[in-house]
Each structure stands twice: as structure tokens, then as C-alpha cells.
Image 1 (cartoon, helix red, strand yellow):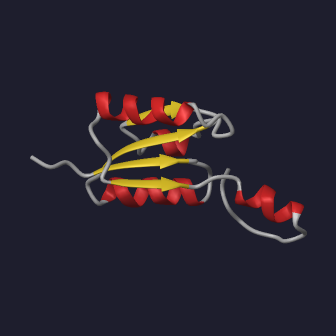
Image 2 (cartoon, helix red, strand yellow):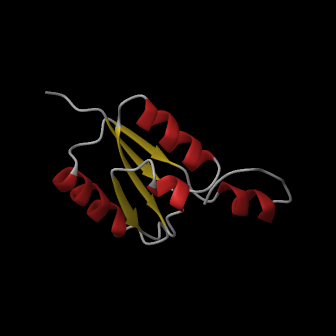
Image 3 (cartoon, one colour):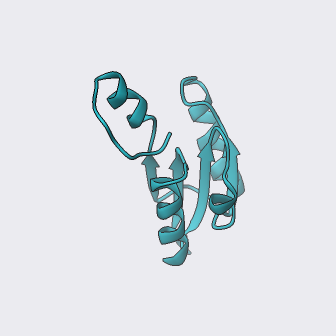
Length: 97
């Protein structure tokens, strides 16, 4: 049996919460990863993990834990810190970190 599994790296308040709700509603098992897990993200997640993506060595562990606990993800979303980068460049945005 093939399971639908989402791994969301950067499950923040805006895009992250919306994606988790949408995929959960579509029947996916959801793994959410962020520095801080928000209650609204946790409510729609099958597994929550905390990580700091500035440490690239943490990424392999996230995939390993996801595969062990839930399975191999079919969809991976990497949603990280675009607001900080745009603000440094003088821009404006609504996105998650």
C-alpha cells in the first residue's frame, strides 16, 4: 500500500499552517518541522520535529526519523526564511521561517 506523506520543512504560521491543513485534509500523513511548532500546526500533524535549518547536518536526521516513524515522504516542501532575506534586501513579504 502506498501512503501519501508530506514532509514540511519550515512549518510556520502562514504558509506552513495552510499547507499542513490542506495536505491533512487531502488524506496525507503530515510531518511538520520548524524551530518552534505552533499549536495550529501540531493539530494537523502526525509527527512534529524541531530543527534549525542553518545546521545542514540536521536535514538527514529529519528524513531518517520521518522514514522510521511515518514512511518515505511523497512530497517535500522547503519553506525557509524568505522574509528575513527579502527584508535585508529592502523588500517586503509575507512568508514563514
